Image (cartoon, one colour):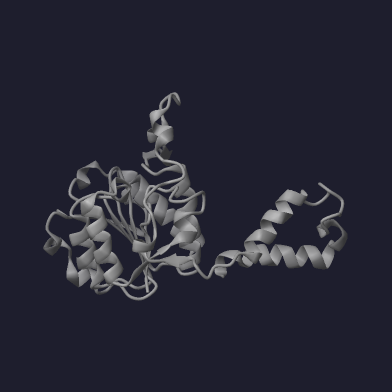
Length: 260
């Protein structure tokens, strides 16, 4: 598993060069604490055979509601999170998860639905430029593009598009067919999410990822029915991301989706 390759490299180097310190009864604390070494070994020994799951096989409860911190008295609150001075409305959990996925997937295209001030698009573009061997393109779509800050527009990998997502016909088919794969699609627009999904699915290929933020937390009838559509389209939940910090501790519960 690619995401454990660095753990294995560390483990092999430690056992080759510092075998005494790597033993359970080694010099505790000289290299790493026994607990830390146990954690690394747990990653290497993890059975990933059930990593990808059907949405219908999973519940909708989260071990921790990831937006809780925004409702507590935290001075100005977690919703005041910024990146390079621009608003970025992501939970701390998801800010940790996306770089993992970008490094693992090596996307050539990131499609963001919902731009806000451009902070998250800028963050995705910076992550792509650092984490991808072949940096690709970030395309961010929103109706209210006049809110996008000029500092976000300057990034060479990032393009903003003014689109009314309430009608999928407004999406530029001629653009979509030219965008290289793998794709990472992030729906943070909350507009006709399953109609948009169905339309974009026509352009997705095996191995592409589709993340639906916020709305799945509602788990109402519309969401349940919509996820039946997603499952029928051949998408599986990647539990490595949904459950990395506890079951569905993410703003996209059951919605880190990989096309099989």
